[in-house]
Image 1 (cartoon, helix red, strand yellow):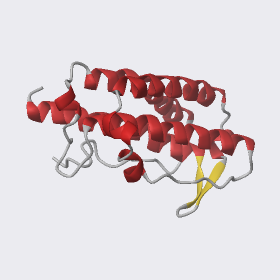
Image 2 (tube, rainbow, N blue to C red):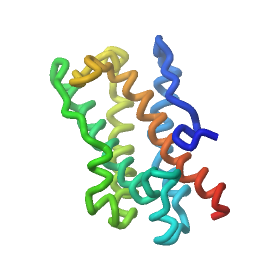
Image 3 (cartoon, rainbow, N blue to C red):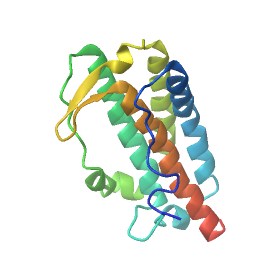
Image 4 (cartoon, one colour):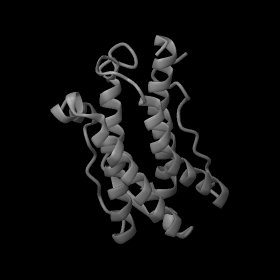
Length: 173
């Protein structure tokens, strides 16, 4: 098993339709409960265990999901209210080394992730097909449309939740 990509890399179809978008919105809505279930009952030592050699700890993964989904939700709002706004990417590894990510109580980020995903789902359900074609400008990868980004982040939550669930399976937790 590939410990870095336990569910594989994201598969984004070239043409998005309403069925695909609705599926991704349901993934956004389901992600907080799945993450909470994945970390249920873990003790401090387990939370501070890396999901793979040289990987982040479970704690860092939980905080990473809250951080990055908040950032992406904000980028969606910029793209919906501005024409191809430039975004500021984050250094996820540097953020994961900050004290709140290294030792902060995961409940803060579980609650934050729930709120972000809930708000994002409301926004997503209000969007038109044309809205999903709106874009933001990433300094390295150029214009990125919201439909594609939604697919990546629907995958992203499942990807990191699988890091935790696969670790639990391997460790017998």
